[in-house]
Amino acid sequence: MDLTFSERELAFRDELRAWLAANDPGPEPAEEAAHYAWRRDFQRRLYEGGWAAVHWPPEHGGRGATLTESAIFFEELGRARAPLPANVLGILLGGPTPMVWGTDAQKDRFLGPILSGEEIWCQGFSEPDAGSDLAALKTRAVPDGDGWRVTGQKVWTSGAQYSKWCMLVARTDTEAAKHKGLTYFLMDMEQDAVQVRPLRQITGESEFNELFIEDAWIAGDCLVGGVGNGWKVALTTLMNERAGLAFFLQVRLRRLLDDLIGEAAARGLLQDDVVADRLGALHVKAEILRLTAYRGLTAIERYGQPGPEGSLTKWMWSEANQELAQVAADVLGPEALLQGTRWGYELMRARGNSIEGGTTEILKNIVAERVLGLPRAGRS
Ligand SMILES: Cc1cc2nc3c(=O)[nH]c(=O)nc-3n(C[C@H](O)[C@H](O)[C@H](O)COP(=O)(O)OP(=O)(O)OC[C@H]3O[C@@H](n4cnc5c(N)ncnc54)[C@H](O)[C@@H]3O)c2cc1C
Image 1 (cartoon, helix red, strand yellow):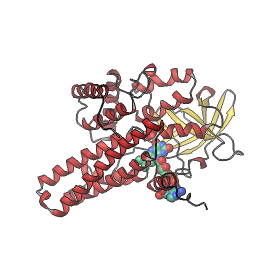
Image 2: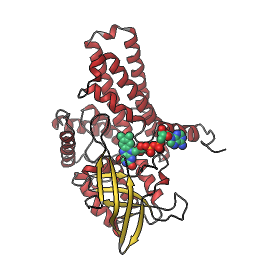
Image 3: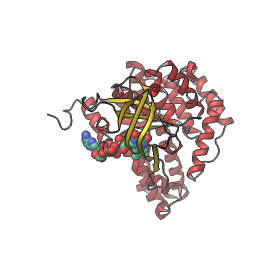
Image 4: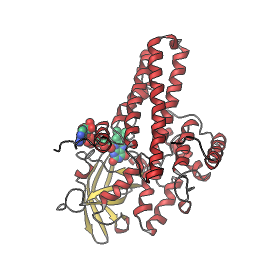
């Protein structure tokens, strides 16, 4: 693994740094609607500056950035304390899926508005009885004239309340084996047959929602990748999920840790051996995470596809972030337990880290089976 940047990568980083310095996103609003508006505004600025999706090919409005440049992009975003763009799911997962599986007409129709943030996308995969075991999903789509009628329920749909389009996986064949009877659609959220009910989290905000879909209409040209091919198309979406985020997450962890060290210093607690020891351990974890994220990148560059490091970094990040939030609570004392405070928010939000984007148990299964070659869970 070579951690030195090439001339081209350094030029990319410097250009981005200069742009971010001239486009300060401003302070992060605490209130949910204002926070979302802040992220949407920042995406518009990224778009106007040509930075909305650096990893997309130039013909689709990106910069054709290499993996290392994409990693630099997320690192610099984190360093500048800039938010993830409002349409992060559209940019990271949504757009790249029709790029692989979509028709030219779909690429023309959908990619531009994702980039500009004009049309926000959400991911309608999980259901009440299908999360880790996604192929068990029951939402049903049946052909109707030149389109499809869809009925079912989705849950945990992040950002659905702001979204125009939903990446929806539905069952189109109840007779076929469970992975084979699925089809991937783009569902227009702006119809009465789709009801979005925000779920209130322990933090008080509603990042995700329930979707109640009752005979919703999907036009035939919004089917992606062919009937019965939904599992493969969904895997493309999922594979893109962690690719860039690992870098943003490791930088976010570093930033939080630096802030926490500052809080501890301000309270004279760096002299306390127990506190110093716990902060030191977190520093080591943050460094391991950074280097593992780079190792994953090297694997993709060498073998052309993500290695198991993706699961490892997500698992390590969630554990480290939860530990950090707990150390913060111990350092700050009762102050960290108050709602509406930064560290109180971190403590509560961190609970979901080991569930979102793949639970820790599932990630451990992946590492056990695909890295260590242990027998598959529940099977002899
Ligand atoms: C903040 C957040 C945002 C999310 N956003 C979205 C989104 O936008 N779109 C979307 O589709 N989904 C989203 N999700 C859903 C997320 O992908 C699922 O919660 C996750 O896949 C787990 O599914 P589940 O909740 O149904 O739990 P289950 O799969 O029911 O799991 C329950 C428990 O059993 C364990 N378990 C299950 N199977 C196994 C096994 N084989 N071996 C060992 N243990 C096992 C799990 O680890 C877990 O602890 C989001 C979740 C969170 C927390």
